Picture 1 (cartoon, rainbow, N blue to C red):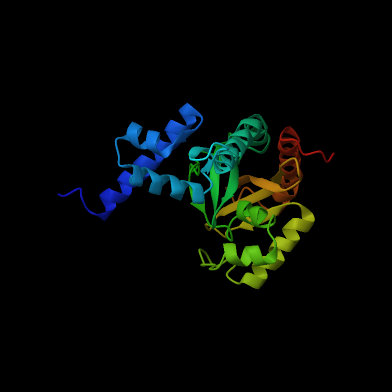
Picture 2: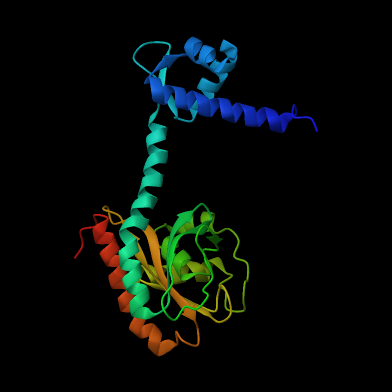
Length: 257
């Protein structure tokens, strides 16, 4: 099979772009001629790659004309990764306590384009063989975590983020106006609820984790079988989830007490 087609060419370009970023990280700054020599490519090839990276904010020209260095876009990407790692690190002990107190499965999720990305999970003593959601992308409109994450957006952003609302069960919200109204309630009361919306027999309660500026950074949820998380049990678990989310938020620098 030939490796000279468009796909192979695209992979090679990505590899070379990554090589440029690595070289600039090591040298601090460098010119196109030097970069081309270090990579063993023609100067015009190196220039095209550097120009593309510059448009994306990943490299920038230094004060020395013709020299390039890593751009602020690298910090933005690193900051996003660091924020996620901070959430998991700071939330883990709180999640363990919450899982122990409720007996159910505890999850941390963040907004990832048009879905909720699950970053961490702790299973409580009652959660026998619970499904591992870590690393999975889950629909925003059918989960308590998703509704909490949507509560950090304005209506136009919600419409753009959830353009389609497929029915996963008979209880799934499938109309944007109804979802908007529910998100408004979530924002007002400080927690979200999803009963049989993602899966029949699954109930989840979630509350927002906020950053130092008070923005919704992530969602903390407790989930379990609907027969165990009935109306009475939900009323008991809601304040416990909210308090745990506030504790994580405080660990991340949120100041409200």
